[in-house]
Length: 149
Image (cartoon, one colour):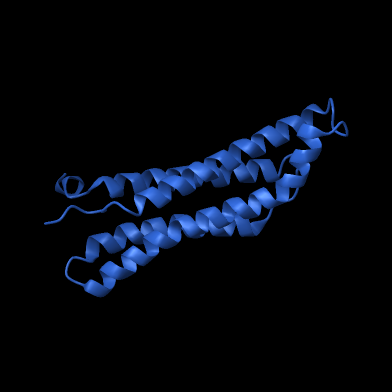
């Protein structure tokens, strides 16, 4: 129980970022392997998984960086890189969907196509999760993970 008492807001926010990133990549995978979109891009999954790995690495580094200035700075660098990976994953995902959003939402070409509308709204939901994850990860980088001794 003393381990949890030593943790700061940044620790818990990092755990939430990790969970949101897992949800985001799950929503992307469900959308990219569905009936309308069948264009799974491994780069989106790779960038998101790298973000999750960096969250875990930052939590570990914060625990062992008590007396080492180099590890402390490495932890700070990793925490800045996390939103970059999440944002990059979101942008790669979004770039594959922008054209279809225009056709589905603003054109008569897909009017009445329920599968297209469902896939597009599912895709928008995944993008919203990615954006929330990116914003929270950027905000989390400003908070300490471990309370000062």
